[in-house]
Length: 200
Ligand SMILES: C[S@@+](CC[C@H](N)C(=O)[O-])C[C@H]1O[C@@H](n2cnc3c(N)ncnc32)[C@H](O)[C@@H]1O
Image 1 (cartoon, rainbow, N blue to C red):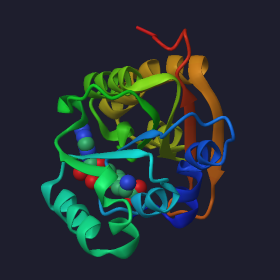
Image 2: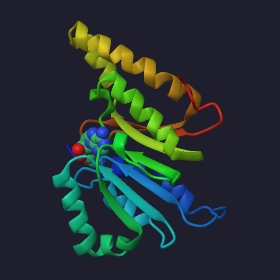
Image 3: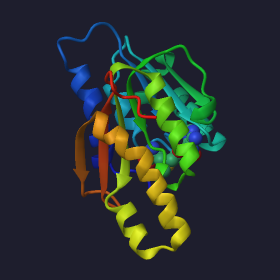
């Protein structure tokens, strides 16, 4: 199921806050990872200011082409077309010199092999500016439920994931949003890169 507008609103909370801040110094660099069919993208594009830069990294070529077309043809996307770029590749292969103020991720990290999830968390924090914010969602209690009802291999996988995720949450989480109006209900984790965000 695509994310609901309530989940999209929670995912873009830090972006909204920065866009409205008086301390903003120039444009923001914003990265959306795994935009899919654009359920969260449409909220992001509404918030963009002319001086911002917006990159999207999507693995699936069909979704990426759909989004590229939207930037050409849909009026709210056309407004920000010249400052936006859709990159068709996995995040692991995305090359850039840009450091981002905001990363918004729709990647289903709980479904990824532990090694890949680790690589992706590391990449998120390489790509963030110091003080930059990562926002991603996960379905509420999904790991706890799956641990109860699944077999040994899945349980072990989830435990490995938690060993990767928890140090990041402990060091860097600034907020968790609860979104009940989504199918299924979701948490949005907001993490901020700080000096100690480098768990091994
Ligand atoms: C669960 S969908 C999220 C779609 C949308 N953001 C939403 O919230 O409804 C995840 C998206 O991530 C993309 N994806 C999966 N692995 C990826 C990777 N390693 N790098 C970039 N995109 C990836 C998939 O193709 C899919 O479009």
